[in-house]
Image 1 (tube, rainbow, N blue to C red):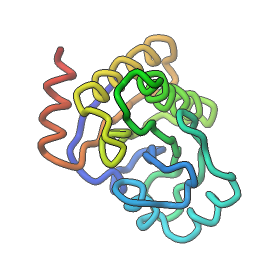
Image 2 (image 1 turned 180 degrees about the vertical axis):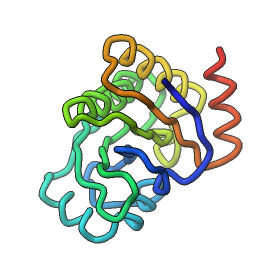
Image 3 (image 1 turned 45 degrees about the horizontal axis):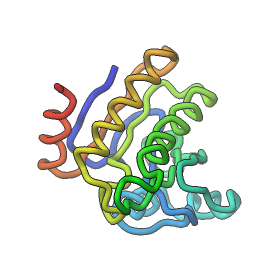
Image 4 (image 1 turned 135 degrees about the vertical axis):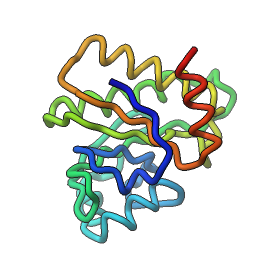
Length: 166
């Protein structure tokens, strides 16, 4: 089941939240910074051991002070013009995150909007791609009970709901 929520992803009581990370995995702005602040210094310490993450890939850590037991960190593409592999890389972020979730027995997972902030991926295109990739994955794999798409802003939430109905 896919659910769209408006709220703070760092407050969700789920098995795992996904972090729209940068390649260093050491924190940054937006949702990345919020997750690192909420999880505490132990998250940065564990992330240092991971030696970063490539765009389109994903790595998992503990959740530390978060309600979520785990954090999956994925690095979305910086949007240029849509013809430099951005769609494939963004799809890979969702797929690799879901694959890691299955490998770790995660039943409930929450995603933020990946690459739509400072990476400038067009919101509608990113949401359609996310919904398609998640739906395709769930058709092939029934070990995840719930995927939450968590939007921080009301505007993003409203648009995501509209796009999910198409």
